Image (cartoon, rainbow, N blue to C red; front, top):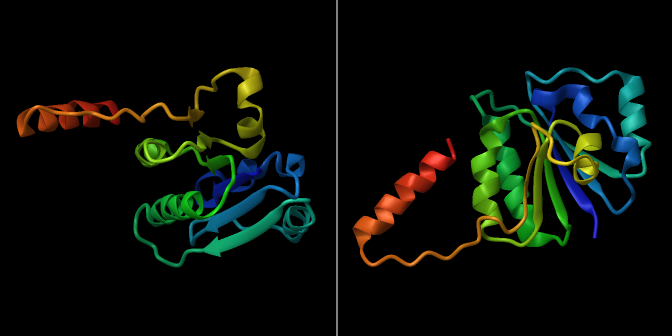
Amino acid sequence: MGKIFFIDFENVGLAGLSGIDELSSDDYVIIFSGQKSPKLSLEDADRIYNSAVKVDIYINNITRKNAIDFVISTYMGYYIGRDNYEYYIIISRDKGYEPAIKAISSMTDKFLILDKDIHSALHFQENGAFENTLSIRDNYKEEKKFSNIYSAIGSFISDSKECE
């Protein structure tokens, strides 16, 4: 089982692809690019496409705020339901992905990671928890039973505050 990377290229640029040469043919990288994304040189594009990993690019033409973030979250949910990767990794410095990762983790036993670049995501276990790394595996899978609607709403409100 490999790893799938969802690259928020608009957010991390070429720095987010640091470590792409460490990936294998079992892995898959999807680069999400938009109008605000930095441009790739031919040399960088050649290096990316000649790596061992399968690479696809999704170009988003919608200019609304957080459009790529929503697309990436949707793609991650789709691939978790469809494929059998062990690690699902979003490469971004945007902490806005944390609620989506926490929500999805409550529905799957897959390993979900948010990190700043591929290299850091691959080595987070060796180096301990990174300040800007969120890794979740089965941490939020707790079934809650409530005696009434008021206790359910109270629990939801307190859980929502944790995500802020």
